[in-house]
Structure formats: C-alpha cells, structure tokens
Amino acid sequence: MIGDVRDPAVNSPVSGRGSAASEPPALHAVVLAAGASTRFGSPKQLVRLRGRPLLHSAVASAVEVAGHCVTVVLGANAATLAPLLRHSPASVVINRDWPEGMASSIRVGLAHLPGSAEAVLLLLADQAALTSEDLKRLVSAWRREPQSIAAAQYDAGLGVPAIFPRAHFAALTQLRGDQGARVLLRGAAHLVRVPLPNAAIDIDTPEDLLRLNAGGSPDAAAND
View 1 (cartoon, rainbow, N blue to C red):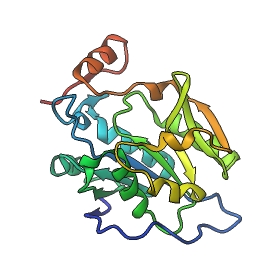
View 2 (view 1 turned 45 degrees about the horizontal axis):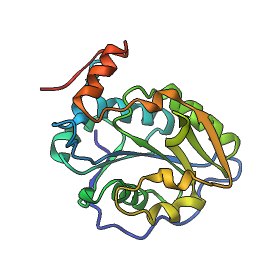
View 3 (view 1 turned 90 degrees about the vertical axis):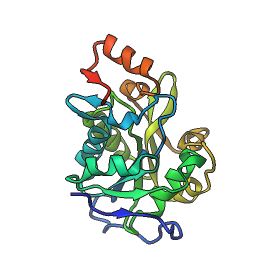
View 4 (view 1 turned 120 degrees about the horizontal axis):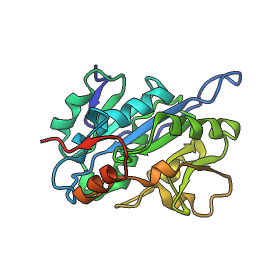
C-alpha cells in the first residue's frame, strides 16, 4: 500500500547522520513525477510499458535498489496517479508548487528524507527505457566512492539518474525554477560517470512514444 501520502508543510532540510560505520551508507531514492505532461497532452505517467503504467515501473525499479526508502513526488494529476502506488512500499508526497518546475519537486523530496539518509538517488518517472539493472550499476559505482556524486552518462553529457551524497543536500535545496540537478554536475570536484545509454530515452510527446515503439523498445501504448 502507499507508505504515506503527505502534503508538505515543508520542514527544514534533513539533518543528522546515518548508519553505523560498519554498514553501507543509507541511500534513499526520490522519484520526480509532479509534471503536468503538457507536451504529451495527457498524464504520461499513465503510459503503459511492459503491461504496466510508466510511473509504476519507475517506482518499482527504485524500490529494487532502495527498498522501502523511496519517496515519490507527485503534483499535477496527483489524485489520478497516487492510486497506482497503493500497493507500493514507497511513500508519496504532494508538491503543491509543481508549476514552478523541477526544482520545487527536488526540494519537496529532500525535505521528506529521514535524518538517516546519507545520499539521495534522484530519478525521473519518464525515462522509459531505464531498468532496475541500470540503477543497480549506478548504485554499485557510487558505493565504491560514497563521497562522490554518481551520475548517468549519456548522449555525451551527464544527468539523472544521479546519486548525491549528503554534502550536496543543501545545494539541491537551493535550486529554483525549472532547474534540475544537472547544474550541480557541471564542474563537480568528485564525480563518478556511469554510462547509462538507456537514460537518454524519455517520453515528452506522443511522437517520442511512437519513436520508442518504432525502435523496437518494449511494447508501449498510451492509456486511454
């Protein structure tokens, strides 16, 4: 079932330390899914891939690498999308400021992390080809260098999914507007690049969906 649906009267950014030195750093995942899908024309989180909605697939992949430590940020169409996660161990939070853009959802996700979180995995709900195996590769690379940012490398650039250690939480909460976390990857002193070509494939328009199907990717069809 849905772990927790909350409307954030946002608290101050997370604080405190995580697990004991003998344990792996505590990783929490935040799935960003608050957008209105205006270019797609209907909630793209409902597009079906491999027989289930895109949002459900993205959250399931996050759960595979982070267990119950997953937060899903919804905004536009939250009342329609939240029921998709009723059987998920993920927590759901509502971003009332979603029209501002991506940065507001990142802030809401960070504000709801527990004090034990040592790092956050940020991922988008519309990266249609991304798999749990991709995320596991990213997490494995980060665990080898847990003080570094680990980011997906694709299309000759860097982006999400990406893992940010606690030292970068404050910078994430300073983002504003439609500015995503990618800006923090530019010039980062400690950065692990993980080739994830699947991360380059997302769905913003119906044409993107047609190209995804034409390219021989998993069977997908828009929900009515």
